[in-house]
Image 1 (cartoon, one colour):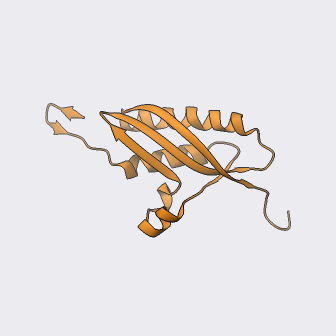
Image 2 (cartoon, one colour):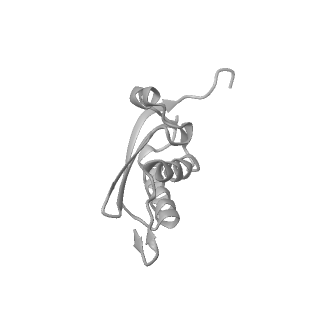
Amino acid sequence: MNENYGSIKITDEVIAVCAAKAALDTEGVHSLVSGITETILGKSPESRGVKISQSDGEVVVDLFLSVEYGVKIPSVAWNIQERVKREVEEMTGMHVTYVNIHVQEIHFGDEGE
């Protein structure tokens, strides 16, 4: 973004943290799932499971996550998309074009429950 006094650059990492928090605050989401590449590259724990692509002030968010057993996955995915889009746009002022949801796991609960 260019302003009268200079430019503002919001890094992918900042956007990823905003998106991760919004996703994790959605009912039915257990956790974000990081891939082997993220583990090797040492991505911060706050943004693991999130991939951000920026172009011309527009953002594409890919979320890789685990959902709780028994939830309706399409409903949870829709809620995540709405929440992430709203939160990232409010926090950054950038337009979110897509929020892609990749359900990688289903969480069945902890032992002893």
